[in-house]
Image: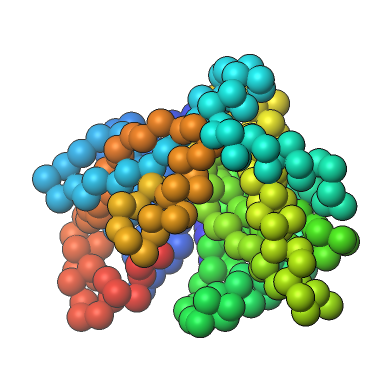
Amino acid sequence: MSKCSVVNDDMIKIKKDIHNTQLYTVWFAEKPVTDAGIIQYKEARFKNDRSDDFITLESDLTESEEDIKAHFSKGCKYKVNRAYREDITFHIFENDAITDEMLNSFLDFFEEFWASKGTGLSDRDSLFDEMIRYRNTQALTLAFATVNSVPAVYHTHIFDDRVARLLHSASLYRLKGDEEGNTKNIIGMANRALHFEEIKYFKLKGISVYDWGGAGTGEDVASITEFKESFGGKHVVYSEFETVNGMKAHMINGLSGLKHKIKG
């Protein structure tokens, strides 16, 4: 459970207790964090000697809505436009408007999404706790699109004063009651249009960057990266790494197996 979390124009920082020391997850940091504890940097704007590169895509929300859309590929633009002619509705909720019941509905959907891919959701309780921490930090949005009044796509984002970053995206292409799979194309349109609705939502909040949550180069994620690229974002590279501040944190971090348990 988070006891102290911060969101400002420099970063998002959430904290949880691990064996009487503090584990911080820090997003978008421009400089090192000095708090005592284990610091996990996500998309840091600086490097250290243990940094791993993290490649993502960013869309510039300071452009006009028309100019943002002009960067979409022809096919992407067609599917976004077409979505508004279908029986699709869009819903975006932020922070305190996101109830525990809504988070559990998302996790039910997320579990079904992973099951449709032949795998499972590894740790539902941990993911629920993570979402609560972001919500309590005032840094979370939960959005979904319905097709024929049935939830078909879910997205979550974290955000600060400058960056909105895609955290989770899940779609179910076989809705209950659709044995023929007739809604598959419509759900694909709903997914794209939900991203556009979120882009407009964050732009209206004055956020300047939409981060697509990674642009991996491996074969297993090539189609996902291609999907994100169709929105016309630019590739950028940030740094991800872990540091340990203070003697107590060094002792805790050295315990056998602990590092594996705190990942994520």
